Image (cartoon, rainbow, N blue to C red; front, side, top):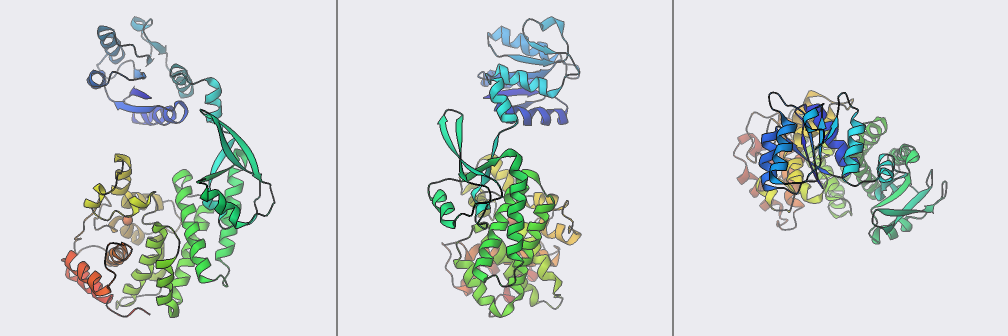
Length: 441
Ligand SMILES: [Fe+2]
């Protein structure tokens, strides 16, 4: 379904647009005037609904639209915001001020969505919980359901794990093998459940005796949960705590230097997400390069881990994570939205982190400059010399890891380093690349 929304107030536009999409399930097309809307209607007459302000600046927007529709004999319902007696018969008119809920409700009705459906959507009884939330727990604090489809838009929820019950890991694996991505909890229990899981994971990560392989998989899981929750609710206290303990866990593994070669082997072979593998490996390699610089300080381990953990946190799919240049953008079948998320991910990471208590100017620079651009938009694969030195280390470590994780790149270190030397023209980058010639042990 498609709705044209003509509203020049940006804030109101966003409010209507989000709610139309969420509650009435319609895509919203943005037009700023009757003229623009008519241009579109000429090529796309199958629009389901038009919502328009009565007047925009000097233009009689609503009247122009109505006249156009009747001259072309096009039957599209029109909702008008603002009184206009001339078109009373041809449009649904709301005299202002009008509550946005009223407009959304009417729109949903016009689009054929019943009040019942709307109620269900506004406050769903059960909410989905990504299955990864269950990897590191062995009991649940509330009842857990699975959803079974009964008809179009109709579902039944069946209780599968009872509150306080212990369950075995293979139950979750079995669900996953069946292609289940989400389990469900009653919506009132959502926050309670998420906090329970994050606390369990934090406890596990803070246990010094946790074996390295297990630590890697639990930290990777924490990364996935942070990624998931940040997209839904942004930073709240439990997400700050969970990301802190995941980052500490990464740093801890890096600081236990005696095992570095072994750690790399484990990270390369571990069955964890590409995203986390890349983040952790570049923290390890970044720290290794840093440790060869004469300005190295121990505190940089934490900065590198922190930056590495969050750099790509707004990306979703594995394909998005594998994009490392402008050319790569076309390699995968991504929608325009998905491409934009990649193009802006550096800037978005910097923005998101502004609400994290450990935000700093250094961190902001690394986030923005992670792909060689100072503004955090797009990619510069031959970055300039005047970037922040730690950003340069980040860039080289990230590029090295990107190549090492690419199954099509030969794994001889010398060849990978030659590829890197060729890619960068700046002298300082060459110096950093050469530090990777040191034997890593
Ligand atoms: Fe990135």
